[in-house]
Length: 325
Image 1: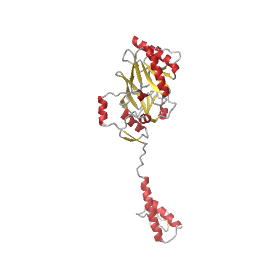
Image 2: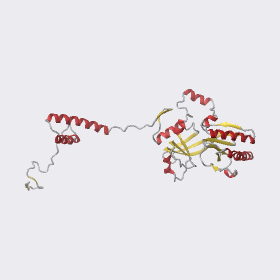
Image 3: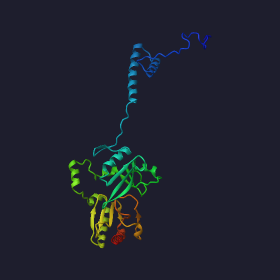
Image 4: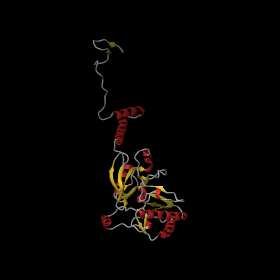
């Protein structure tokens, strides 16, 4: 192409307005995306112009609809229907676990002091009975395995409140409360009426053995029967059922032993500390600084009838220590 030298910069000879940039022609009723599609459509299709125009217009309408769909709000993701006290669906994240725990905290014996974004998520006090309360640190997780990220934290958690407990290797020093199994067990009323709530304030809730031991736990039933027969050797005792354990007391109102029935045996809690008790055959575990439902500072397991005499001997030691104090 020939060029012409002017007083300004060199320009093409056939440019009508030197120095002015030509603007591309864009039809107002078509977006650039649709116009590019129109060029590709015209290059690969045949037929008369009217047919092509009609097809392009239909294609343009579809593109506009798809373009609008990409900008539409993301659909909500919900869990399985549970219809529990105004909560229609099960939690699908940690926020749902926090909400559900807030609905149940008082009923579970917790009094929340604060909830925050930092670790631990929640600080609360837990009722121990006899007008005493224990401070506990709580971490919320949708799945308990999510707590692995906090294993190296200096501040230790006493409880993991989760929807799904999927961590078999959870440290024994941390108690896991799985809300899903708690709701599915039927221990909590799904939709209490106003009349039921008023009745709860006027009447004391009572529990029974059936509330603590599953009807299929025959081994635990038999062990408890043998244990109570052997316990009579220490004298007349009183048995009291709570929501999470069975309390046994003798001459005082203070319980001498508290038992948590389990599928494979009985977990027995005693108030004296581990260093004050002795047993040649049962392994004693210190739980003084570990979150649990009872008032004990030491626990051991009764896994068979052969452990019952040693268990009664330990309870005898606990009763003697209680009388001395």
